[in-house]
Amino acid sequence: MKKRIVIAGPRVHNVGYRPFLLQYAQVHGFTHFFAINNSYNGEQEVLITISETEEKISSFISYISSNKPDFAEVTEIRSEEYTGDVVPIGTFLQDLQFEQLCKGIPAILRIEEAQHEMISLQKTMLTKQDQMLHKQDQMIEKQDQIIHIQQDTVDEIKGFRKDSTNYLETEFSDIKKKLQAIENALSREGIRV
Image 1 (cartoon, rainbow, N blue to C red):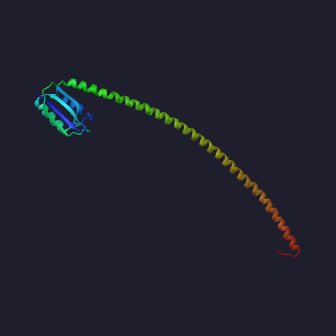
Image 2: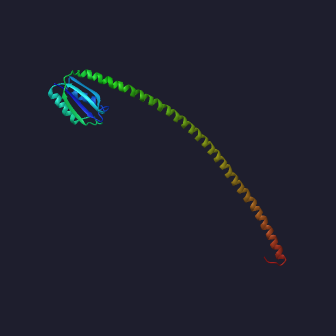
Image 3: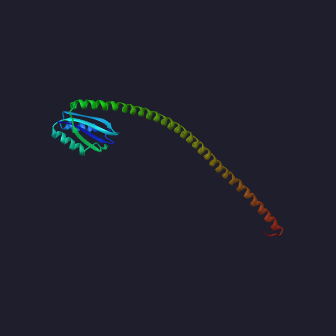
């Protein structure tokens, strides 16, 4: 028995539908099976041709009516009699592998290009990080200079306080002596303070 089955919907391409269908066909021992992506009236389709026993085809239609790849969006599944040739499943497998390889090569090249861009960006980032580290080293050097200047300033202030204390103690001592002498002189003259 031969059938042509159409799976139609807004998203049945590039969601892994044909590998999904092939896996079922291989597991269930199909010998003649083919699936191709097609567009009709602006809608995506997966066209399947199959030549198997009526029981296998019925089980297949039942399966695909209730199962689909995760990201697929299906609006209709229909089947009709088919009179053309159906290729052996091995031929479909080879065609599908070749098609996937052809899709994969540009993807691999885009990944490689993206990796080159990432490496270039990483090199730029490393250069900027080196510049930042150099600036940080300069800032640390300036901070060390400031700390040294602050320490010198603190030492000078301590020295000034020590010198001032000695000077003021001497001056106050002299003033006390002079005041005492004035007080004594006033006292001798009979003036009380």
